[in-house]
Amino acid sequence: MDDSTADPRPPAEAVALLEALLGADTPADRALRAQIPHLRVTGGCACPCAGLDFDLDDTAPVPSVPVPGRPAAEATVVDADGEPIGGVLVFATEGRLSALEVYTWADEPMTRLPSPDRLRP
Image (cartoon, rainbow, N blue to C red):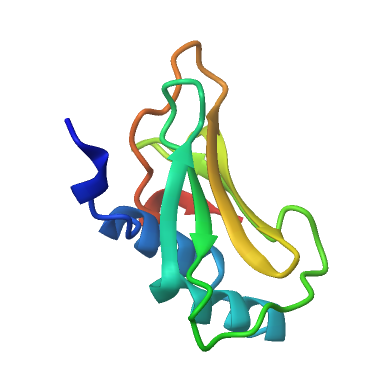
């Protein structure tokens, strides 16, 4: 399959997850949320998990922003019973969104992005 015709935009599930994780009313979260429409997916994790790597379109009219922490955002992922099963991390490099990582405490990786309603602080 020729990847040159693939849509480089993050899938809707990733956008919803990023918006939920960056939902705080802080200057850093507001600036990072403004970058979401200008992201391109450049790859993913080498394992079969659902993590994504991003690059920000250089023509995007959004500035990079100092991000006070590494990761820029994180949350615990819970199962249908509300039990913690893993987590998600958002990374920013030099003030630009760069990755969305998912991890699990189970033997098998999360191969799909969790829905925002499965996130806990």
